[in-house]
Image (cartoon, rainbow, N blue to C red; front, side, top):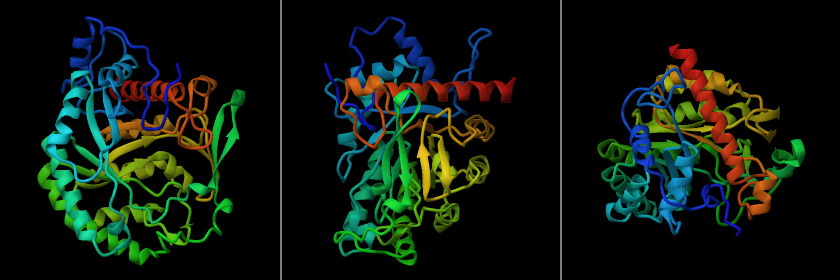
Length: 378
């Protein structure tokens, strides 16, 4: 039977069966606050002061037990997802959080969307911001620690195309020349940096104090792809200088970023150096873990297999461990493998994949974490 495999709906192709008796103690151990433990003379595990390998989960799935069981089977105890429509309420979120937790998984990150008037500085943005505030408060009440968001004038996905990798696997190419001359969309218009910085400053000054009181961290994802101009609009999060400016608008751990080591390399920057800058300031509130090959910074690169790109992912993981980064780490953008093509359909990026591709990336990330812990702690 075919199952829907999307970037935000990872584990829908796993066979359902009764949960084994050993599941409960395993899940309890995974969610404990103990520091990384050694299984006899074996491998170190995640703990309170380490990155938490995470995967997306489909909160609309008919069986949440099916979803969480699939994560736990591959050793993942932390999840993220797109959130519901605004405004969120505690009454809406609590049953979802409880169902995920009952399966031995913590819901650590919800993506918030639905405030275009705020992004473009249009009349009605104050009403949108009030809904965002309510949603942040609801997340805090139910114990969701991170709310992730985007602030694109336009996301330049028109530059993506499929390439072929090893064994015929799907890769995602990105070339600015394919879309740089496209005009602005009527519903979006064209916006310069001054406009966009003013709009996000207005937003942050309104919502970050609320997030602080709710014990919630906001994580803004960088512009991805980081093209200089996207259908006539400049990109505030398309450079590391932009990331630095963002965290200075409101000086608070609740005003942080999603650190994407792949985007960092796409911009020609050193991911370890950038990780250190934001990590030592406690402004990495979420982490994306992937590995592109860059032909020309900002404008031409290929998102390939996690083990083939230009990022030294072990060095990045070692830096995270040294910094005691303890939030979620999401291995994203899986490659297109035949297993997923045969069990499709596959949504998302050209050349992207589903369950099998995600499984490969998660296993790789777990190995990098264990290697980093061994190297750091002996």
